[in-house]
Image 1 (spheres, rainbow, N blue to C red):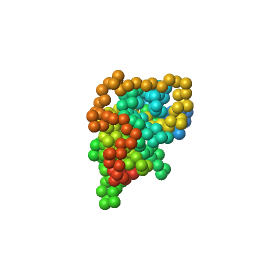
Image 2: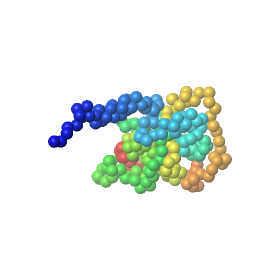
Image 3: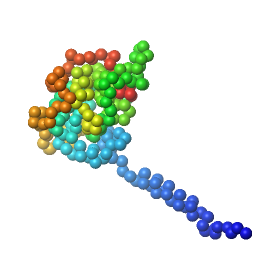
Image 4: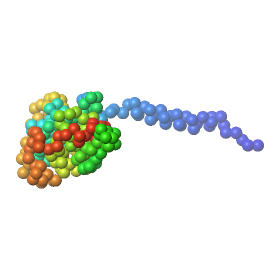
Length: 239
């Protein structure tokens, strides 16, 4: 006759499973989420330590971003810069960020993860039905958010529009893994009040990788490049 398992052993496995689920649930509820003003730095995979280090570093003089960044965007003034170890190597230049309920994500340690000089949007279409071209795309945040050539006079669907010469400079200069900061000066300047800003000359820093003679000049309005709305048709895929 087959012996039956003692009654006290029957629920043991269920108790182990239930206890495990309870621990996981409690951990999820009690683990603090790293967040900044306006839900900043909420892109998937952001390292809280990298964010904290970026926020604690001194600002680059004349900008709302810190010396850890390679590219800086100020959403308040709609301007952007390129840095090299605390030196401004290009900028300020005019940009257009997200609008119409599709804001550009704020972040202090966003990272370049993809580049595509001839990118075409899979979500946005031209009037003829073809995918909208988004030249010189440099992707730096979840959702296909990128720097790319587009009209600085027209808000995007989350991306950063740059005049064509600036978009090419961004594409040539930025490398995979480079830090991008997208911030608001109205928040960053008070945060760093009393902390001396860093001001360096580009000639004292490393060579301007990828920035050639036709695109090294500082610019506040490179109107000579393509500024056509046909460059982009506003999409979450880099619009």
